[in-house]
Image (cartoon, rainbow, N blue to C red):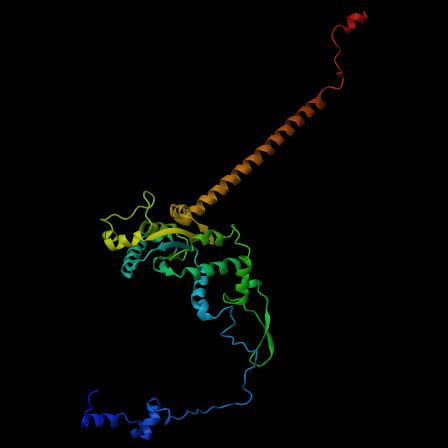
Length: 350
């Protein structure tokens, strides 16, 4: 082993790291630099106010009890999904496969452009800025579908909880993270999901990475514009031409659309397949035209029923009138006229 060199620099370095030479003020400010032999435990002052201790069974009103911890169940994301399902009447579901951020931005750009070109008269207000395309967490969205489908908050009974004053008060825990919601979806899916429910029809789509396109209202014109961009199918929903929309034919947009697949949707709480979505998007004139057609159909059916009832009453009236006229003619006949004798009866008597 090589001999150590004794020099002024080495002696200065040893003196700099020597903890015994650290002043008392520095030791108080930086206790981590002290050795275990010189460090002392910290003592903190605590204040105790008599009469302000919380009861043992106190439940904070801003943090109600949940079935699972928030960090495990992703409570905020779950609540946002349940609120979205309850307030959004039209949702399109897409499966995506490794789309980059640039591809998502390009697709959203072309979608906004197509939606902004929809005529304003098709909806009471302009809903184009509120239409959103977002990526979702599939498993949490699946749980949100179960809660919206099988959990009824109005059916939850109140329970007795301890208030801050120590008294027992009735409280209803019917939020989406409550134990009642957890037990409701557990009981509904314990023996298999009924095929007649909306969740049973949408559950096969809850596989892999998903993205949803949400509309604040059911607008066939905006739905048709979105289908022409995200899932074109000529001749009903042709893609925009290169002359009308050159940005749509960029390689980035086309590469992203090839990784995006329309799998289904949810309209007014009902599950729709691709053909059903195209039927809704193909309604001419929007919902107002569909309502007008329904009113015309009901009026036609009512007029036909009225005509049938009037025809039956008219025929009955004509029958009664004809019979009455016959009876009146018989009463007006002369009383002296008896029954006519058959011919040849008098000749026989002679």
